Image (cartoon, rainbow, N blue to C red; front, side, top):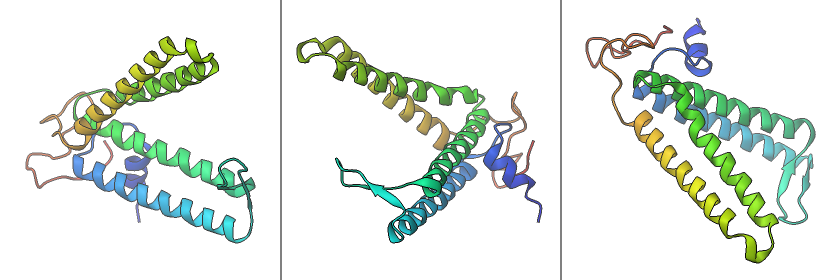
Length: 177
């Protein structure tokens, strides 16, 4: 079996894909990574290969299994960014738009840490800024979800490649550009 097309679909940031492949890819990758994570946590819990957080009383796998969970998380993010970048390309937009909600979220988190480090009466400017960046993150996330998941791509070729739907709506080859 030729795995080139699957490697391109899941790991490459080049080319265009139609909505159907984005939805299927995102759902399948989410289910597979979720099942893998659950299995690792089950094995870790069953064999006592983890630690219980004293504050939250939650079990966390440690060692190799903890590192494996981190690797699965990173792989999940990479694949979802690759699928989404190709969908943005289909809409004739740069894949760099995916960075915007990530950056605003990181800024909101940083501002929240700064806010909580302040004495009680001096938190207000930081609180407002954190809320503003959180709202910006939500707005960007909703816009990207609608753009990627529901809107048709550019008809015909664009700067990112040929139309994945081809001439007919039913003719949708899945092949690397």
